[in-house]
Image 1 (cartoon, rainbow, N blue to C red):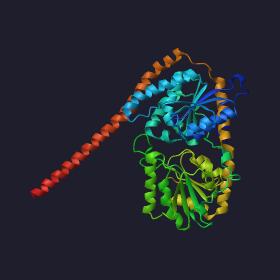
Image 2: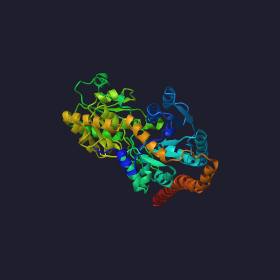
Image 3: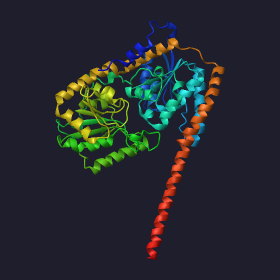
Image 4: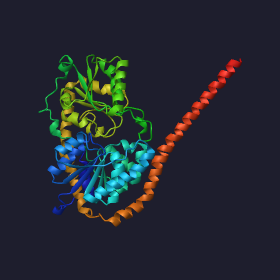
Length: 486
């Protein structure tokens, strides 16, 4: 097993021997541009408040949603802001500066000691806002390698990382990509994972769902389970890494294509694709996957049970769990391993942090249905060896990948940064000076983002496409006239 990246980081940068009591509690703000999902942010804030006594606030994108319900129930304060997701690039060019200034004013008013933002869409507003406001400690928790691999978001990260005190990779791959981009080691923090509350994933207390009885399958039916949202098919633009463009990021199609190969050795195997579509476009992609199942004649083998609140119990009842992603942070591997469900995952992103091939699970090549089938068959073929892998996997998850560990690592990092930060930087002159320094950079970024990577690029591409169609139509017309003259 790997050594603790946090301890490695501390050994290089030095752990404070004492923590000034005046640094407790810190006034902390976490930012996520959503009002649904992001349970990890809610759980981190709750732990940081209840376990370490910090004063916590969330910044979200709407006043209604599942995330808002959780924040209200836990009595965690939240602030709603506009993250400038306009209907087109031209409108966004005007909305983003306004959104940045409004959020900067909120940070100044609240005098936070620390602002931490999650996911890229949050970063593009929260990073410059916290820098302009003069927040003493500014952190990006990199939610995965995706935006570091896509051309547009990659150059934005390279151009603006210095506005943060530190970047926190949430998998080893993200840290490696930061180093490849030339980001100094002093700006790259230890890997801190988005760990779930392990109490919700305990095989000793979570009862297995009778999934076989629910669908009328014999008790000895092999069951392979994949728990993942059906996200919309990715675009072909520069916001998407080249290798995953025009594809479903979770690899549902690859799993469906692997089914016939698994059936050659286990004819009665059943596959559960648990999860709902993410929005209307996600529903459309879900229908594409169902159509693929029909085309391959696999309706009796592949089942779509939709969203399941008892997904942990479904994992408990399954023989194999699969994460077939093309680009990923940790996916659902922590949860399946905590449930001691033998796990197959693709060799991408942070999945290699949790699934150690031959130690805690089986790794396979991405976009390779044949290799995916090989991994599944390997675990179905030797149930004792599969159970041993899963047991070691749970032990490893409890060491490194739980919510308690995430909160402890964040608190330790906060304490270290707080001992060397200036607690008060909220001066108007300071912010105005930064605005003047940043204005040329922001102007350059706006031009490049909206008129080079965005509007002009797509406009020229559209013009070129129409031009080619006209040439093709003209050529066809000439051929028809020539044919008639003959």
